[in-house]
Each structure stands twice: as C-alpha cells, then as structure tokens.
Length: 152
Image 1 (cartoon, one colour):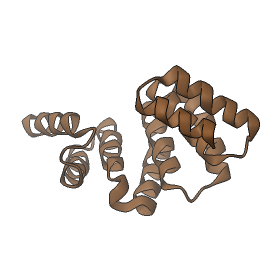
Image 2 (cartoon, rainbow, N blue to C red):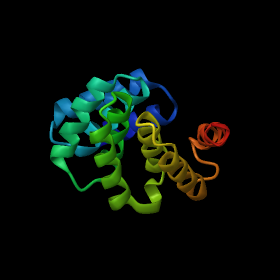
Image 3 (cartoon, rainbow, N blue to C red):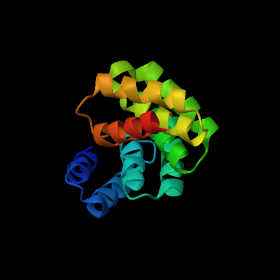
C-alpha cells in the first residue's frame, strides 16, 4: 500500500518514470492488488503507451470490474487506439457507475463521436462535460472543439 501511495504522489507531480517504478514494485509484491494495476495503467496512458496501459488496465478490470475508474481509463485507452466500439462501451459503463464524479467520460465519448463523424452527438457530450466541469482538465480543448463544431 505504501508503494502505491508513493507512486500516486509521483503521478500527481508528473514524475511518471518514478511512479511507474513504484507501481511495478507493488505489483511484483502482490499481482492481485487492484490500485497499483489501475494506477500503472493511468501512468502508461499519461506516457502515451496505450497498448501497455490496456494490458495493465485489463488486469485491474479482472480484479475489480465494479470500479468506474478502471472503465474510464480502459475507455480512454480504447479511444486513443481507435477501438471506438470498446471505447463507447467502457465510457458508458464509467458514466453509469461513476455518475457526475466521472463526467470527464463525456469528453472522451465526444471524441468517439467525432471520430465517427457524428458532430451533433459530440456537441451534446461536450456540452454535458462542460456543464459538469466548467474548469475541468479538458475544459479548454472541449470549448475549442465546440467552437470548431459551431463553425462547421
């Protein structure tokens, strides 16, 4: 647990190699520990290593499929690897399980719709995201995408 907590601190500081190392050690000690598996998947996403992230996130999903967060990050990795069907499915589960706390999933659902050429659906999802998190992590790109969609 201490290694996971230390890894989370490194993750929050953007020190991804150090975070990754701590999570990997924690997993070596207990391969069935949910949090280090999830957190390693998140670090790998932040490093844009989506294939490796998906492998780790699937392990986390096999440990606890009721976690909204793991579904969110599987969905994000799926968007980035253009597995749009899986992305939409996982993000839908994340929203269902996590509700308003995981409204960021709307941003990634919008990206799925944009990749499918569904501008109206993307606009709806971006609006839902911005209503829930007007100053969220993805609020600037969401506003930019909405502006582009209005001009199209």
